[in-house]
Amino acid sequence: MISVIVNPASGSGRAGVAVSGVRRELDRRGIPHAVYETECLGHARELARTAHSRGQTAVALGGDGLVAAVAAELRGSDGVLGVLPGGRGNDFARFLGIPLDPVAACEVLDTGTVARLDLGRAGGQTFLGVASCGLDSDANRIANRARLVRGDLVYVYGGLRALSRWKAANFRLRLDGEPLMIRGYTVAVANSSMYGGGMRIAPDASATDGLLDVVLISDRSRLLFLRHLPKVFSGAHASLPFVMIVRARDVEVDADRPFTVYADGDPIAELPARLSVEPAAVRVQVPVGSPLSAPDARR
Image (tube, rainbow, N blue to C red):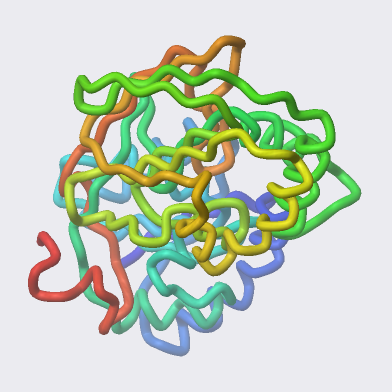
């Protein structure tokens, strides 16, 4: 039995439209299910808690924020998270290798296997994907307020709008206690590899290694930054001389002006912030054959 927790407004209504097709597909596959609409992320957590208490898989049908809220409720338990992408970016589903069509993604609920994955933490909040600040703070704020641009292109739109007004910031970090300073664009702390609708900001990030990939983009001209921006979709930006990627378990970040830290599409902290990793914190249904379901991935 599964509980499908849906935010019908996710993806500008995409998730709500997908519900009927998902129900038909689950019926076709003989998977008993119930569907519950969320009123807010707090309500989604309550629904996940109820599903776990009944021994049911809690399936999030919506965007990365909904998936993260359900994961946060299941952390540290034997409950299982299922993912049906219905948001704008759907980056956690992309990372897991789950089809972006929510009806096609039902196959993973039917035939998938369970992997135990890490969670990121920022104060009292948890995140599945990438927590970032700097230029990304401005880009996320613009994207979340956009009404005319739809789908994952909203993140590109937000990034370009933010870049047009950007001035370099001085970031102060401590990585597992070691100090580091950079002047530049962005600090991204990644539990998984993608954000912004398929941008592979941390191409080698793993959610099973107990580490966070910290991506530091130092100052260059805005024209040069824009010229290389498309490389982030393939991960080729990682070889650029002004991009540094290091790994740490504990990351402290501050800057010379205020920034909001965003993760999974939502604001989760203000600078200064401390981010860390919680190894093997949540059980997630992933496709058979996924690297996350390999024998050396933690169970």
